[in-house]
Image (spheres, rainbow, N blue to C red):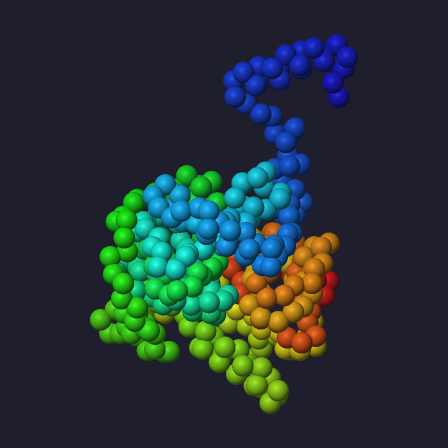
Length: 355
């Protein structure tokens, strides 16, 4: 215990700490080492019906071109001080492209993807390979690959971009490079070259036997995702195993060269809840962003509860309990940062009903 006589001496010591760039652990340990994860991010919901009209207005007022690169509206978590980050590790944004418009080519070390909740007509061109974007499709884009977009249709289109920008920003590992102003091709094939090589379930080209850190398949098509989910629920109704829990089907998008996650820092999944289903509450380290693809339901994250519908996006911060409920059925796309924490040996999952 510090005596009254020692207080001036202690104050002087603290001033000297500050001058020398030192911070005593005993004044900070509560914030640095909490008893359980205490993310600055907060549970939050963004309504598709509110943000899509703003993206459409930006499409009328904001030109596409060098500098801004993309007409994208980032989801800014209210707990992160105004930064354009959905969570401390994840970026999510709505990108909007007008008819006949071109988003210039660039590349960056951030891993990225596109998920399409509605519309079609845009092709993303990855290293010269045109990849169609259609409702329900998941299109991964590993870091440091050239890519641009062009809208070949007579209608505008909006979609969700997900990246690990915050993680790489804080890690100080980001690189970015401009490419050509134009995507270089207006080809619009129904299947990309990557799909023709890699898009055959359970089959791998013998010429490509070396594992790669990210998936070489540039499009995971909705028809395959939908069929897998329908089959899981059908098997459950027949009394066979296959679902995560009663009424809850789920699939994970994987890298066909390893069977692991599609990208080193991002995990992506699709979840389907049958009518009259409620999921058990679960919490885990790391964070996730969800988008409602179809249906309606109720979402509880921590102490927050919302009714959600098509297109709505919500964030689940680290160690916040999540449960889902639906009367008529609910489809959700999910992406999260679990691969980072698994590699660090810090991934933990807890089902609250187990305690």
